[in-house]
Every structure is written in C-alpha cells, then in structure tokens.
Length: 576
Ligand SMILES: [Zn+2]
Image (cartoon, helix red, strand yellow):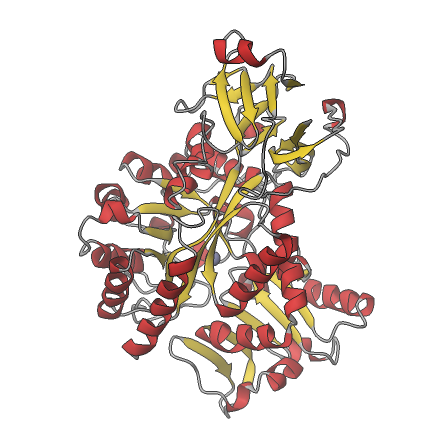
C-alpha cells in the first residue's frame, strides 16, 4: 500500500514545461508506479481524492521522500534532504540519518526526489473560482494588440463555435483599443450577443445584441456604475464598475445552467491542482457560486483542496442592504466555519472600494487622465466603518479591495478604529499605489498586505504611465516596503484577471519583469522586488496566515498536512 500521489506538470514563466508536482493525500492506493524519469515529458495525472474523516485507517501508510532539497521549516531559503509522510500528514522533515527516519526505513516506501526542490503546496490567496472556470472556456483576447486583432479573433472563434448561444471573451486590455468600446465595432462580426470582459473584470464591452438582451437601454446606472450612452440615451457598448457587477454578471449568471457552473468549478480547481496549489481563497463569493460550490463538494464527497471564501458585500446607499449581506455571511458561518470544517469554510466578507485607472474610477489622491476632479472611493468612510465593525464583531475577516492610494488611506483609517486589529488579520487587497506612510502603516497596524504580483507584469501595465504622473508610478507595487514595514505579505493571482499559475507570480514578484513576454526587458520598479524566499513564503505560509490556516498547512513541518509540491527548478528568480 502506498500513498496516493497526484503527479502533474506545470509551466515556468517562459512556458517551458519543467515542473513536476506531487501532492500526496491520504488515499490508500496499491500499485502506484512513480517514475521521475518522465518528469519533463508527460506524467500521469492521477485522480486526487480527499476524505479527511471517512477513511477508517488501520494501517498507517508511510512514505519517505529522500535525496531532495526540502524547504526547511521556519528557515526560508535553506533546505534539508528528507521528509516522511504518514497518511495525510508530514511525520518528519530532516535528514536521512535522523532517528525518526531510520526507525521507519524498513517498512516505509521510498521515493527518490533526485535533488528536486520540495515546497509547501501553493495557496492562491485571491481567486474567483467560478469565474476562473468559466473564463477557461472563453475566447482569450489578451494577445490582441488592436481593434482589428480583436475583430479577427472573434470572427474565427464564432465560426468554430456555431452552437454557443453567445460569444464570451476575456482578457481585453482597454488601452489596446484606445478607449474605443462601441457596440457597432462588434455588430458585424456575428449576430449573436458578444460580451468582451476587460482583463481587470471591472467592465464589459458589448455588441448591440448583448445590450438588447441585457435590456441596458431601460436600465438606470446603478450606484457606483455606468452604462455608457450616446447623447440620446442609447447605450453605446461599455458597462463598467457596478454596471458590470449589477447588470452583466447577474444576467450571465441567470442564463448559465447549474450543471455548467459545477463543471466550471471543477475545471478551475483542476487547473489549480495541476499548477501545484493545495488551497484556494475565493475573494467574491455570492449566492449562485456558493450553491454551485456546495453542489460540487456534495457530488465529490469532499473538495480536492482546501477552500476558504469571502462573501461579496456590494456597496449600497441603504445601510439595511449592506447589513443584510453581512448577515448572510454570518448565517453561513454558523455551519461553515474554521472550527467545524477548516478545509471548507467562510472566512469573512469582501468590500469592493475601488475602481480602475483605465476606467477613470480609481480613488487616487490627485486628479488624473484628464479628470479635473478627485475620484472618491466607492464606499464612503462612514458606511465602510459600519460594515467593518458589524462583520468584525461577528468574527468575520474583512477583506478590503483598495488598489489606489486614496482608497488605501481610507481603508487603513477605517480599519484602525477596530480594537485588537492584528488579531483580526483584515487584509487589504491589491495595494498597487500606496503612499510611503501607508506602506509603513500596514505592518504597524497588523493589516495583511494581500497582493497579486502578476498584475504588475510589464506586458499588461496598460495606460498607467500616460495617465498617472511618472512620480506616482514610482510608488507602484511597493512590496518590499510592505515587508520592511513588518506587514504580513500574502500572494494571490486574482484568476481569472490573470494567469492562475504559481511560478509566474513568483517570477514577477522577484524580477519585476514580464512572465507573459519573457523577452521584454522592461522592469517595474525593480527596487521593490522581494527575495525568492520572501515570495515563496508569501505564496504559501503568507496565504495560510491570511486565511487562518497556518497551524496546519503552508509550511513543511511535522504534524502539518502533507500539502507539498515537488518542483524541478533552480533556486534563482531568473530561472523560474
Ligand atoms: Zn479579485
């Protein structure tokens, strides 16, 4: 009897398959053949099953993984040679000569790691599971460089997908079309509704068939959102911010069957498994996604990896609306909390406070992009404080989406009214432009810096440099300052806004270069790069801390879950 091993491949930043991942879990499985010689070609992808409490174990299954470079627990960047796994737990991490290893040698199976590096399983600290899965099925427009590219990609896709009821696209970078998002540009491509979601997910560009089925003409702009219109009131094609969240997404959600949603969740989780993840944090859960995720879990018996969720609380001018969303999260927490089910739980709420530079909805301290006025954060401070207070009092973590310096400052000002703030581990998400003072305040106040390095990829830096002053861009993605200020750093990918792969995230964080176009020599503020040890820690132990699971995963330590990946890599940022 051997451990069940999940063997998969992933890709380096430059697209070359060179990763071999193993996630041993506790399924007793006979006749496992494991051959590292194949690790650079096709390895079998074995099903990953996980039944924490349902296995009635009589025999303890022990495997020794030796001749590796196993990231030393508590010492980032140092390695030991051997680890022992008993059932689903790490029993020992150390050296071959350790007494704990010698004792089990006669009865244990052995896997020769052949000098490969073993890291804790990655935890994606910011992902949208359902959207991520749906996105995998959409036409990706990220490679398109102009309107003509977009038109030709859609035409080709439409011809090869004749039975799709509508054409769904993703990865549109607004600066690529110079702000042009008019429906008429798309109308002649296909008679079906066409939806083009922006890379940052904050807006959708529609053709007239899509605007018609959305009934956009008769809808007013929702608070914090905009349906772009011609002077006569007819929608012109772009729906952004709250119009995306309140109009486009609910409609597409309604027309998608539950079966397809469950299939999308499965696709997202499998893709993350193949990339070396053993845990996910969903950052904007709603009713429909929650039902689908539970259905998926019930069908399987268990999820293949640990999942924590944050309930999306949209801004409303009506306090009762806000409270009803928070109360729903509190209600779910009664059943799905960390004490009852640590591997499938609700951790808190998510408050979306900011917009985008491209869309001129970003909360910055100064006017930008031709605007004469300063843009306010989506949530007024008093409403934000009320929401944080209500959720915190109920034991919920508050994730604040604050990308730009003015919104970050407001978020920190509101958070610091909370007593015993460090114990709450409230994260601020994104933190793309911060003032030097606020970069320091994160650590001082115990606020988690939850960031997505893939968003600083120079290939998708977009219209920033033109729209913001150069000086302000120098403050972009100041990760090293957060670390020096003592903040807990946690990494996520924000998939589907960016690639879900773990290694490109580490590559961009440590080199500040593009993983999308490795030949691109541009760097974004390289002085703010973090070390590889810090980056790996942020993608594993850091996300475990941010999701309150650091007592059982995120680090290779005896007694912890055997959540780990074997990586065929050189321990150097440029080689990722
Ligand atoms: Zn997100």
